[in-house]
Amino acid sequence: MRMSVNLRDLFLYEAFLYYNPLLLVTIMVWFWGMNLWVFAQANVNFPKIFDLDQNHLSHREIWKCATWMTIIVPTSMTAYLYLYSNGEVTLAASQPVLLYAAFAMALIFPFHIFYLSSRYFLLRTLWRIVFPLQAIAFADFFLADILTSMSKVFSDLERSVCRMVHRQVATIAWFEADSVCGSHSVAIPIVLVLPYLFRLFQCLRQYKDTRDKTTLFNALKYSTAVPVIFVSALKYHVFPDNWVNLYRPLWLVSAVVNCLYSFYWDLTRDWDLR
Image 1: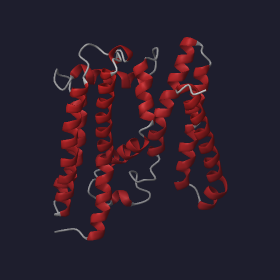
Image 2: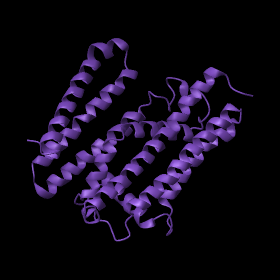
Image 3: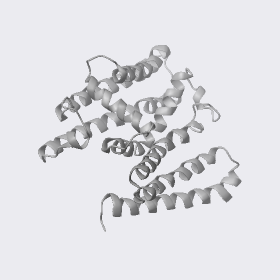
Image 4: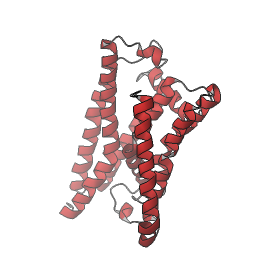
C-alpha cells in the first residue's frame, strides 16, 4: 500500500533529518582531504603540528574514505525512501539504523583494519576534549573548535538517535509537540551547548597550565554562547506572553553580545587583524 502525498512529504523531511548529519560529515571529510592536499603542496609539516604518527592518513586516503561515504549514505537514503513509499515500513525503518550502526562499528572496530591508528587518534582526541585532564594539545582545541561549528549536525543527530532508540523511525509518534524525540526536546540544547563547554574548560585548563589571562577572555567568549542556546530553548516551554515580554529580549541581548564578542575575538586574536 502506497502512502498519501501529505504523508510522503512528512517522511521526506524525516529522511532529511536522519541523513543530513552524515551527509554533512561526508562533505567535511572531503574538505579535510583538500586541506591536507593544500598542506602538502605548501610543504606544511602538519603531522608535527597535529602530533600524528608516521602512519597518518594522506589526502588520498581521506578522499578514499569520503568516496565510500558518498556512495553508502545516499544509497541508504534512497533505499529508505523507496521502501517506505512502497509500503515496506519495517525494511525502510531498518535502513538508517543499520547505517548509523555501521558507522559506529567502523569507528570503534578494535582490529588492524580501516586505519586503526587514525581511528584511535580521533577517539583519543575526542576523549581528551571531553575530559581535559591534561595539557591541551593543538589537535585537541582544533577538533573542539570544529565541533562548535556543527550545531546543525548535533541537533539532527540527537533527534535521529533518539527516534531510533525509542523505535520511532518511520512512524509519526515523534510529530507530537511533547514527544521526547521532537523538535522541542530538552535534550537538544544540552547537546548543542556541550562543544562550547568543552572549549570553555579547555581554556580554563590552559590558564591553569600557563597563567596566561588571555585564555580566560577566550573562555568568556565560549561562555556567552550558553545563554543564547538555553534561553532560545525556553521558547517551547514557557507561555507565549512570557516569551515575548521577557525571554525573547533576553535572548536577543545575549545573541548580540555573543556575536559581537566572537566577531571581535576572531578578528583581533584568532586572525590577528589589528
